[in-house]
Length: 277
Ligand SMILES: CC(C)(COP(=O)(O)OP(=O)(O)OC[C@H]1O[C@@H](n2cnc3c(N)ncnc32)[C@H](O)[C@@H]1OP(=O)(O)O)[C@@H](O)C(=O)NCCC(=O)NCCS
Image 1 (cartoon, rainbow, N blue to C red):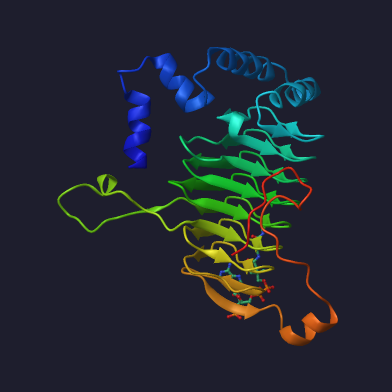
Image 2 (cartoon, rainbow, N blue to C red; image 1 turned 90 degrees about the horizontal axis):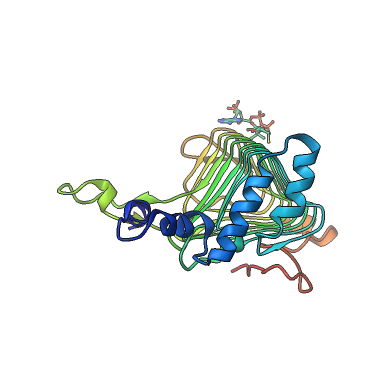
């Protein structure tokens, strides 16, 4: 169970505190990499203002699996398991963000080109993967969570407003003789958000949901079922208000839509590409 596993990783006294820190935070038990992580994080968190931005741009890329050109890390950014984080070109990770690629067998976090993470946005893997396409904006204080082998995918051109929450998992809760926290997670595979979709402020998207391309999720909606392409949904639970496309067949003939592409890039892009089912 992920919760117990995480807890024991922190409290397991059969391992030294240093080893637990390496496994939970650094993502490597190699001493050389750990010292590099410590040094870079210490230097990167010292300097304020433009000097800090410049230092982190030069230094943090040395910890990541891959970092493209023109990547900015704001003040107070936390990196966990950075060796499983790959970011494209012209990515902005604003102040206070968390990139946590934690997990024993996961691939971690992939960000495409021109991605902006607003202040204090958190991308958190607990043995899951988060894959974000190109030209994606994630609002301040929004949180994306991929647990237990789930994959959370945002296609290109997706916008997410502030304080949204995507992912996580439910717990099994059939038994009354043991606490819910001991009954295990009820995983549904993760979330897909299609090309060009817009998720409003404070919306919650639950595990297992697919949001169609160019769909809109209204502010404060709780989405627990798939949302069709071009639909606008609102409410708790979210219901379709209307569709944005009145004549789908005619519109497609006259003006072909760009292809749906989930993931980070095209054939020549070294970033991994997700396959649309
Ligand atoms: C979904 C949204 C785009 C709809 O905008 P719209 O097309 O102009 O629709 P309207 O405001 O005319 O509302 C249409 C109906 O939906 C209802 N509605 C709109 N937003 C709603 C919401 N968040 N929850 C519940 N119902 C909502 C309206 O009350 C109205 O109902 P009615 O026809 O019974 O009066 C807009 O309401 C919204 O939520 N935008 C997100 C804003 C945001 O989060 N910004 C953060 C920065 S990214």
